[in-house]
Image (cartoon, rainbow, N blue to C red; front, side, top):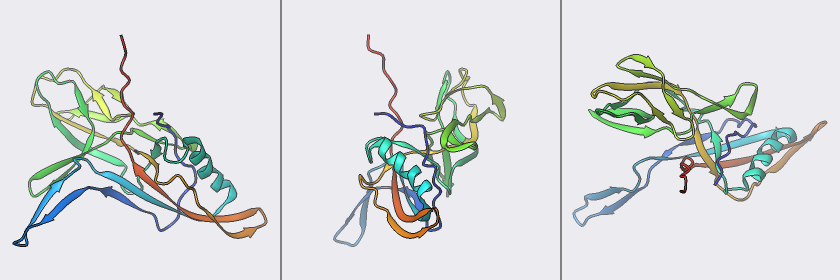
Length: 218
């Protein structure tokens, strides 16, 4: 399935909501205690984009993306307004001979750490916010910047072979692979001005997995 390296051009208004979700199964025992089981190792982000009194021109940008990906069928890119930058994030203590690393952001609470994987190394093009440009991470090994090979679709880097014990960190910008949350695009006409209708509505986006790696068949 194709992943579109593009963004919805129209800008959402106040009322935006979004963030990471987990799935946890909770069973309450007879003694009142809970048994909790985490179904997901990684979160799924969900975003609700409100569009209020936008022009027909702005609406067409949403409509074009919706039609192009056929509703929920194909993923595209979205930049989380609240979390799109990594700053000197520790991703690994290298193993001897290791060359490949998955980029992530790290949360440390009470001595325990958790890594949220980062996949889509793209940002909106300043010249056209609907287009995506690659975002190259800055990677350091023991605080020394090194050259790496980057998989922008999956957030992976390839480095020279490590001796073992090196601290691998990165900084950079990223987005999320998402799909529409519905196969319907419902918008309402709120008003009419000299240049056309003003339109409002909400768009839900759900995070999806990055593209699968292509495998060669021999």
